[in-house]
Amino acid sequence: MTFADRMLRLDRRIIFLLVGLCTLIPLLYPVGLAINISSEVRGVYDYIDSLPEGSVFLLSLDFDPASKPELYPQAIALLRHAFRKNLRVLGMTLWVSGTGMAEQVIGQVASEMGKVNGKDYVFFGWSPGVSAIIISMGQDLYKAFPSDYYGRPTNTLAVLQGVKTLRDVNYVVSLAAGTAGIETWYVFGKDKYRFELGGGCTGVIAPGLYPLLRSGQINGLIGGLRGAAEYEVLVGKKGRAVAGMDAQSVTHFTIIILVGLCNVFYFLSRSAQRRSEQHR
Amino acid sequence: MIFFRRTLPLLITFVCGIVFMAQYYVPHPSSEELLTTVNKWLQIIGGFALILGVTSLFHQHAVKIRRQEPGWGYSFALYAGMVGTIAVGLLAKGKESVDGGLTAFGWVYSYTMVPLQGTMFAILAFFIASAAYRSFRARSREAAVLLIAAVIVMIGRVPLGEYLIPISGDITQWILNVLNASVRRAILIGISLGAVALSLKIIFGIERSYLGGGKE
Image (cartoon, rainbow over all chains, first blue to last red; front, top):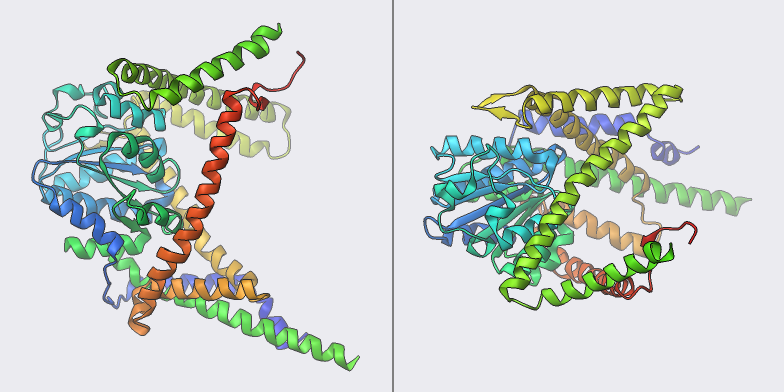
């Protein structure tokens, strides 16, 4: 067995250790490299920034705890921006397993920004039906959610004054980890009820949403931890996403080096095999 | 009775399919009211589907525990977890927090479900790195193209990459916006045309597998 063959059969625990160290060290000793802003993220930021005070902003937190590291920082940055602009924030989720997290992030940012539940924002929670709930909200918001997450009748809340259906919502952003998410909001919501739609998603599903972005079906896309970091930079309050970018940088380069080495060893091993076949 | 097993479901499917296809294009209040009502039904059915799913899961694992089949201990753990969570969930009326304080249900959610799911997802990073090392090889021209594109996107999506190779960000954007978007769009159009064709086949009773098998 040649050296290349041995390297191709490298114990995976060494790779695990390498990835672990490459994640941990930059988190402990951050460098803070500059983060460039992409047009996709700027699309969401600029639209929220252009909304007049009192506009209605619906944030659908369509993810579960598995995607928390990527989407939670996005939610925090978006909520900070919306509350700073004094928008009326409506929160909800299409994922039942994400209800607690969604309630937590909205409550956390609202209290940090001094916003009052029921007056400045409302959290609807989760309701079964997925696409049906979006259509139902488009028909009559109060029939879709007769009460909010805390059991208060929605038709008595000051934050919902003048809001009857999704047609009265100025901007919807879905932070999605899969289906139901951005595509669901487009197909069953925006297409029929004509509101502006933006999206945030995990890095894994972001490439799949580019057709929607390029055709204008969504006006912006915050992709993965990188997107969250860009939004934090735009909002001017750096958080966990910016802190995680150094770790992501080093890990990406580690994987690139590993893939490069694996290919070098692969070609060395192949040429050695060919040489030995020729000698026979 | 063939009428109740076949004809009636086909008739309901045909009528509902045609009515709701037409409904999309009719903005009359009665048409909108019809959609609202049917959506309410869908939400209710969705709620019952959840109960059905949980009951089925309970039944399946109860059988495993009773017969002490291999791995019944895992079924027991699932049973204990589900029963425990449902119990605290009912006690807390489904609320994770009340007046800013965590309920027992909220505690289970925040300190078991959130870290467990987070850990499962985080482990992926290690396995992806290991899998990439073992299998991401330029065995053919197509694989080499894929490999080069992946490396460029990985460089261009992180600040270190943009710092070392400033043009990598623009190339990444081009790959995502042009190559990726056009291929994805082609796939989406294909899937959508297939979905339309299948829907029409179901509405017109050509595709009947959803009715299930069994004797007529």
